[in-house]
Image (tube, rainbow, N blue to C red):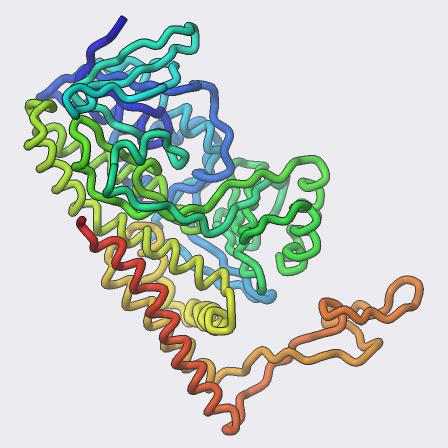
Length: 494
């Protein structure tokens, strides 16, 4: 048994559902579309819950803005970055807004649009394999949830949108496939009734010695907390969060976090980076979404890139009168490849570069992180430029390079003229900075480094300048090592 379609989409997530709806809107070339999804139950994920302003704009362009209605979505007006008890406000420019929400509710909203779309069949089925004839993909074999036999679904064009754990990525890309790199894991839970430092703003807490912590409200009473954990992941995540992370977070979050950890499990998700690769290896099939291109979720840009890709691809597919003509399709893929670069490359590069800075693994990156925070404290264009890049409002790799290296040089300047955070051992029995005693309940003195050391602010002396000059050279080299390879992954076209 087989069914014939013009376009077959594997995966009804963000990209797949939006694509099915968008392709159905073509008046010039009405097409029959199949959207296959392993399970149409509401998905339950800890990422994909913050849509940047540019993503909201693409949602409007695709006619999908209604997917944000009725799901208790929260307006997002920018970010608050927290470091060592200090907070800097980073608002979106010109009153722009993002949205945050429960991922599953948003996906279900997008699926409803696909279900109602003319010419779209939404089918609950597990795709087992691609069907090839004469070196061309002509469809898939899949098993419906209600049956046991494999069924062939044929199509002129097959689009794979099965997410970050794609089963077909290597088959589609062949020798052009690029390996994914998992930098860390986001470990997440939901806080009840938490009060963020600035309401309706994402909060990024910089925790020294560890990855950043991201918090944002996803409904009236629910706040998502994502703790970045570098490998190896501790066996006791709850203990790790309470002992290593909690002390660096704002006080008003301590009790909601403890309450959440006492009743809920901590879930984790790999933070992977996958640069895009050209898609002309196998005829009749293409990739889209996380199946093709991934970036670190710290910047919340994944859904924005996916919706942008859907919008650009649909514009070009509307002009193709024969999806079987691979020469036309190669032209479409080439145009799509270059037109998506402005937004996708900016968000991809920024996600990893910002993670490296906010993760601050080593002395040079710690200098970079401190300088970045001071840069934000300047306000004005030092805030407007970076947040315009992060939100997708100003997709420009040249503007990103300008601000990234401006931060690098500003960090170097701050080394010489700003007080430095100096590690200073405490004397036994000396009180903590927060006023608590350094004595245990039975009167013993704590002697471990975590409880017996403190930090002081000290201006550098002229005797420090030679060492700071050498450190400055290393900081600048670190900036080049971070940005250069990331830029290279985006400008490669082979």
